Length: 236
Image 1 (cartoon, rainbow, N blue to C red):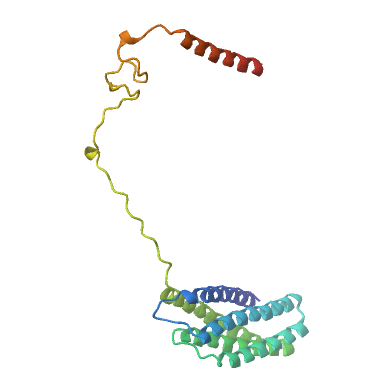
Image 2 (cartoon, helix red, strand yellow):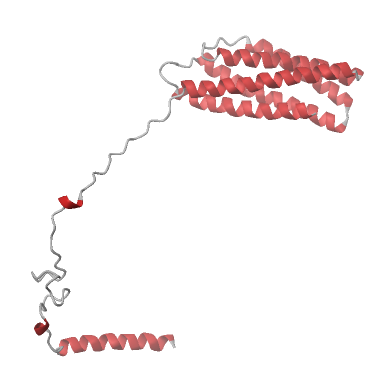
C-alpha cells in the first residue's frame, strides 16, 4: 500500500516538472529549438502522468476497503492503460535533447504495466508470489519515475535561458574633500551663521541689533495666545 502512495506522490512531482518544462520551452537557449513534436510529447506526458495517478488512487481505495473484486478490476484497467501508453509513446519522434527523458519514462511504463499484471493476478488468486512481483515491479517503476524527474530538471537547467538581469549603473562616490565648502547663512543676510548672533533673523547680526518688539509683533503673539487658549478650552 505504501508503494501505491509513493507512486501517486511521484506522479504528482512528474506532473509539476513537466508543467514547468512546458512553460519554459519557449525560453530555451538558442542551441536548442523545441519542435512541435517535442511540445506535443510534453503535453502528452503531463496528461498521461495525471491519468496514471487516478488509477493509483482507485487501487489504493480498493486496498483500504479490502475489496478484492474492485482491486482486480482496477489493476486490470491500469494494465490496459499502461499497455496503451507504451504504444502511444512510440509515436513521438522527439529531439535528441528530450530522448533520454522519453527513454526513462518508457522504462517506468513497462515496469508499471508488469506491476498491474501481477497485481491483478494477486487480487484474483491471492498468491503471495504475485503480490511480491507486483510490489517489485512497482518499486522499479517508481525508481524510473524518479530518474525521469531528475532528467527533466537537468534538461531545464541546461537548456533554459535565465531571464536577463538589468545591470544597475553604480552611483558615483563623491569624496568629501572634493565638495566645495560653503559657509552656511540660514537667514540670507550675508553673515555666516558662525558670526551671526541670530542666524535665523535677517535683521539681527549682533546683540545690539535686538530691539523691543513693536506693536505688530505684540499683536501677532497675542493672536497666537488666543488661539492656544481656545484650543485648550475646547479640550476641557
